Length: 367
Image (tube, rainbow, N blue to C red; front, side, top):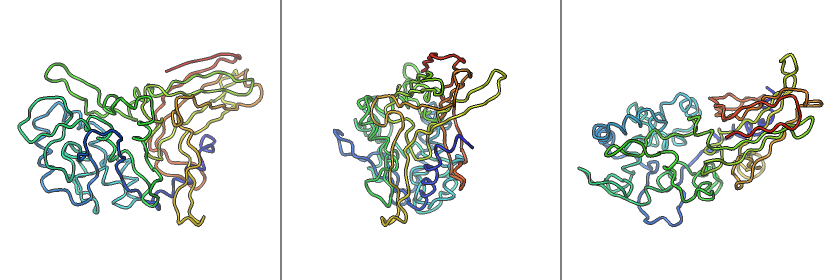
C-alpha cells in the first residue's frame, strides 16, 4: 500500500473522469500541406459496407493484415482492459476512437467491436471522398487512391490522440500531438517510431504492429535513467528523455511511471521503501463553483517541460548507506482508484531496474 501514497491525490481525481466526459477533437497541425480529411472518429453513423471494404484490404495486403491482427489498434475495443473501463462510461466517450466503424451513439455491434481500429478507419476517413488515403510514396492501386503528404505526418494520428475534456474546451485530456510538436523530434513522424520500415524489396512497408506502451523495448528506449546515492539517507534517480517524441508516459490519465527504491539489510530482508509517481496530477473542481471538471495541478512526467532530467529523491531513512538498494522504474496502467487511495492496476511493465551496493558513491546509468 505504501507505494500508492504518492499517487493518492491523482487517483482520487481520476475518479471524476466519467462525470467530465470526453470529446475527441483533432489538433490543428501548423504547416500542414493540405487541409484534407484525416482519420478521425465518426460524427454520424458510418457509411454502410465499410467492414466489407476492410475485408478487401485484408485479402490484398496479407502481410500488413497479419500485423494489424495482432496490434493494439485491432484490439482497441475488444481488449478486456478497455471493456472494463468502457462499462463505466457513456457510449460516446471512448467508443468513437476505439471502435470507429460503429455508430458512435450506440454500443458497438460484434463486427465493429472485433475490428477495433480497422484498415478503413485510417485509410478511408469518415466523411472523406471514399478513396483510399495513403502516404506520398508507392505505386498505383486497383482502387481509388489519394496520396497525401499530411498522411505521413502527425496529422494522421491527431484525431484520436489529442482531445479536450468535453466539459472543458481548451483543457487537454490527451495532448500527445502537442507534446510531439514541442519535442526535439517534431520533424520526425509518429510512424518513424511506431510504424518502422520492415520487409525487403517489394514487401517493404511500414509495420502495422503499432509498437507502443505494451512493448518493453519501446519503453526502455523512451528514458535514460541515472541512479546514485545522494547521501546516507537518499537515493537520487534522474530520468531524462530518450528516443521519444512526446512526454513519457503520454496518453490518457491512466498512465504513470512508478519510481521506487527498496533497501535490504545484510540478511536480505526489506527494511526501507520509498516511491514517487510521475504523471499529470489533476484535482477535481466539482464543488468549487466552476461547474465541475478537472484542473491540472502539475505535470512531472519525463520530457513534459523539455529535455532536462526529472530528479526523484527517495528517502530510505537513516544509515541507508549500509543497505543494498534495489530500484525500479515501472510503467503502469490503472483502471480506477479505490476509496483508500490505492488503485486497481490493469497492467504494468518494468522499464528499467538495478541495484546499488551498500556503499556510498555508486552510480549506475542504464538506457
